[in-house]
Length: 344
Ligand SMILES: [Zn+2]
Image 1 (cartoon, rainbow, N blue to C red):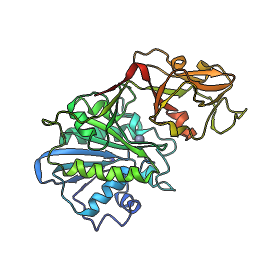
Image 2 (image 1 turned 180 degrees about the vertical axis):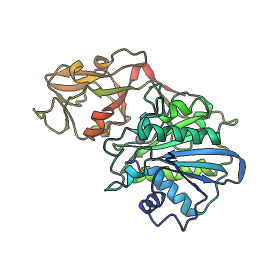
Image 3 (image 1 turned 90 degrees about the horizontal axis):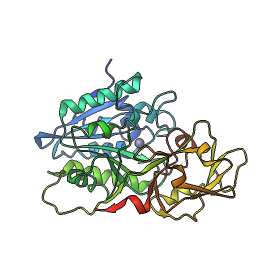
Image 4 (image 1 turned 135 degrees about the vertical axis):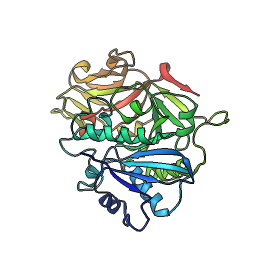
């Protein structure tokens, strides 16, 4: 059974009058092929792997409405359309009971989401794009950044169309970029918070750059001034550990984080900045593995009379205040400041 519907050059009039009607028109996961001025090359734009991250679909809708022609052929994949349409629109990362699609891009490709992931990879193989941009939003508010698994000038060039900040990570989660990277330069772009107007605007201006520029890969530019952040560590809750966001300790929750914690995104957080409260031993509550597979919990966190603090200066990002996402994915990513941050 095929999941992806295929459309070629849909007209501005047939795709509806809002992003929601556009998604209804698509009806499910869709591959949209756009003929470019240069038909000898193809670029890929993937978005809505997560149904609650609207910026990419909004930008693509706006592009299709604008009746412009891309510089090169473009294959656009809009993935979690059903999850996005579940009421209220753009509220669900995936449908209840489904796996996270952006954790399914590796064998054995089981279940509906696994098969959809495999189909997306087959589409990419078929078109062999010169580059792949996978656009996401963060669940919490915060600035934009790129993510890649391998760093070179091509990735610098691609990410600089959107932002000057890039995370380089070898995390092995089953995300699209981890596998796609072997064949085409691939970057994940987190354009900012899913509810942030400026994230939608950045998605739009960045997508225009990506589609309109005759060249998006590196040429003879000296440098793009992209700040590189290497080897972030995911801080995860151990299974079954309760979590709340509150300005006060909540005795029924072993972990309580302050509700404004997302304001710490990308700042350097010093060891005296309180993060919340805990009522148990750190290793019972949390897990965190560094790039070499060692436990990093006590390098990231410390407790003082039940209050939770960073153990050292940390750069934190992808901080969520959505407890369901924090429990199923992670609380945040952290980079140890003395060890890993470099500017290139
Ligand atoms: Zn996402």
